[in-house]
Image (tube, rainbow, N blue to C red; front, side, top):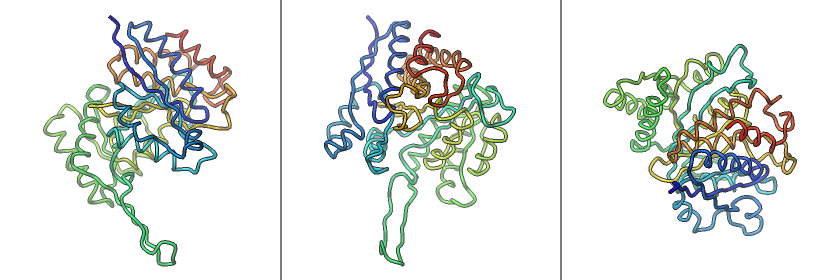
Length: 352
């Protein structure tokens, strides 16, 4: 009997439904090839639903989504909805409610893809960022004093717990060990200024490494130095682990050096629960319905999803298929690929 997985699909806004359609097309093809079954169920969470109902997620949504093996997300962001409403109400809500405490971002330059960094090749840009995903500044702890006056004070606090830091670090050590490249894990922080938060991170980093991961080389870099070296010497990095805000920033830089948002995929991971996978780029509303958006990031996110739910061979096959077709594209940018959105999906399927 075929193994079966239940996948919740949130196509979302703008071009999200278009890229998710191609991703599902590829996922169905690879599941047939490797002998397992994927059952997809669609949810209409996003801007249009919010405009009609005034709700981002219904009360039942989180508990319902817990029953799935994974969540496959297209994009969130609508031009008619004030920025922050959908992002907080859907994305952050799901990450926090489902305790998706890892944001996993491979930064990998594929063959034939242009990078803005001179003289760098695919062998030079191949690392992973493990970002803590449910703590730090994004918890939203803080407030105002005398708001709207000339004496206004705004406070935003970074919350870092030993439990949250340690489980993120352990996940990063495991990723480094499994990746088995140079087996170097770099802690990205700011110990010279953020002396409380990153003292906790640094102490936990070395305690865990010394006790349980002596085969993994431990490295440290301030976040500003990390940004410089990602541009100058990206080959120095194997796996980077960092907090929520720094991770948010350096992964966007990572997307640019690997060729842009059109190829960047990520996972919001709960290793003990349900995880959510998505292309990193936004909803790109100006391209909606034109069949010109690049679906490769969504397809790669689907491959990551397969690896995480236990179909690692199939997931790696998806990535290899993408790598085999990237040299055929004129560009990764929307409307400049030399192929339509659906044609790119077909190319990946033919490469499987």
